[in-house]
Image (tube, rainbow, N blue to C red; front, side, top):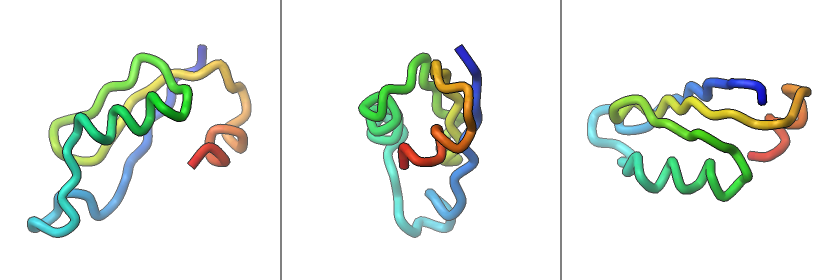
Length: 61
């Protein structure tokens, strides 16, 4: 498994576009990622996948 970090911009900044971290985690899990962990309320996500190509990971958005 390869480990990745998604650094999502504009989430939960200044009260705009609030996103619950539980919902964000579920979204990543629904895309097939494993061991998904969100970091505080920052919108940053750590996850693992069997995909070896970063291009394949990016396409899952």
